[in-house]
Length: 123
Image (tube, rainbow, N blue to C red; front, side):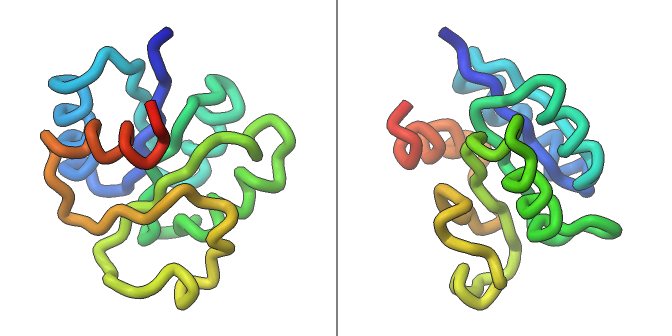
């Protein structure tokens, strides 16, 4: 059965690169959201297996989006991988490490992204 992945990033180029990298290496259903609020709407409707969530976004950042996802019974069990350009320990972000699978540092290698996801999630 194919997996569904929601990619959340306010930068169109980052969305396009991640989507293209995953399209080339998987048969997963790929969804996109350009903001935290859009991510909440899409994830509540589609309930993906994984959310790749950018940390730095205007209005609702990754931390606030993650908190809202985990507060909603419909979306709280979705696996979340944070994506960030800042190289800081997760403990310094104020994010509960129990709420995320791991953190990927941007820029990432688009053609390695699928393998990295498979590795951390055991897919």
